[in-house]
Length: 623
Image (cartoon, rainbow, N blue to C red; front, top):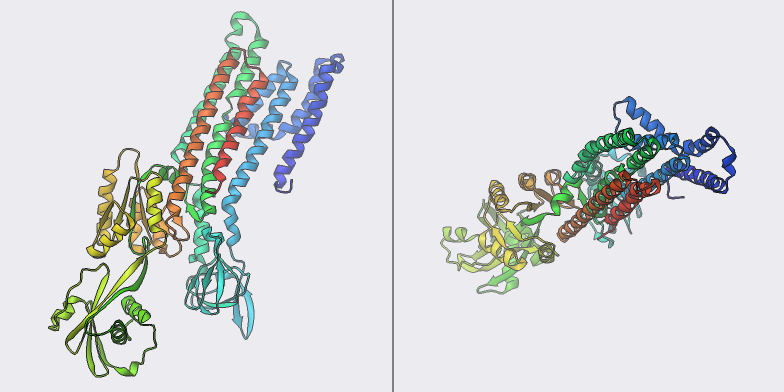
């Protein structure tokens, strides 16, 4: 009982007390002890356990009737059990209410477990931040910390805000956000995100985002809003129940009144009508279908996948076309020197000349060349450094005039250079007007990208497409390496929307298209696709806001995983709908014909609901 809420423990206590009283009364009834009592006294004795177990149902039904909401499960239970008392079926009346409450308790526990799988994310909210003040650490509310402030995070503490490490070295536990069990190493210069736990060492970090804009706050907003976006199936069940309940209530009334006008057996037909009402309660559908979607969202959240609503799970289950942005999504978005091709010098000499020429540039390409060189740079060797926007740089190094840039810069300076068709960005170098070689800089494929494409196709995707603004040669190389079906290169942001529009038209009936991106220029495409999937760790705020699903650790292999979760969820939801309707309609017919008694009616209501709930809880499993 420790895992139950206070309300659930109270309900369980009422069930136990009622069951003990009911069992005693049933023994008395079958041994003839109650035969000596007048009917009204026997009825009063059964009213005691009935009120203990059913008083809340009676109150809810009365309140709903007063507010004009007549036809719901509370109304059906009240009418059926009161009618059973009226025809002398006292034990059946108590039994119906007792087993209904057992089903309600089971439902409450199942929904609570499903909800906890999502709202356990609330535990990632940091309670305080450490600020160094006059040589002492002060604990302050994270909301009071400003961008640019320095915070101190001790081992075992939760990171309160998004920041960049300025001092220290540690291991970061990201399991709460990304679902990854292996901590990652972080040191000076690395970004850390709020909600993660600092593992091994004390670190200092400069805050980069205010608390309201931090990763942890954005996640909680997504979680809190997830339940508001219902799937079409959920909306159908809600509409169905609103029509179904008054229909069966009227049918039960007709069953109780019309036939006895012809044969005069009022008691028999009222009993059938009561049985009919109990059978007709739509609990199994109303409870199990939303619970199934909620469980699917919970299962995804534990894997580091935030789904913003059940409607998006339903769409993902029909995903057939996956469209990817390249840089930062399929590739790391980190430039690295992939090839050094010297002419008339060694690779080391070419890298040294290039690194010195780029020593004052903050361009990512310049940084990648300096990183590949790997040695300290003596800037005293460099004079007359300059830059030609969009083309390259020039400088005097040890008295030599060095030019570094694209092929156009070489030609503008009258230097004959052999143009390379390598995938990636080619930087040509010349010293004293003589060509000395080229350096190829490429964006490396992200780990797991190729595996993700294979798994997507195995999960049912028919087409995997890449969109990029990069040159055709580089796009061709990436597409070939990943096994993509189609790719488009040299695109502007507006071009991506047009291509997605075209791909949407090519999709078949009930086939959905997803766009996967991470940059701010991806937001329009994410919003236009049937389903937008954003990279949550390195993705921009605009991309995460526009997306319907957020992959918290940027692992593309989570996309086929969420497809599997969605397919399993939809399969379980459909199983519940078919099972519940088939059993109910079959027993409804038997009840109207007088073949089904009140005990079978209880099974058709509570039993079917419990079975459907148990089936829905399968969606909670982590894939």
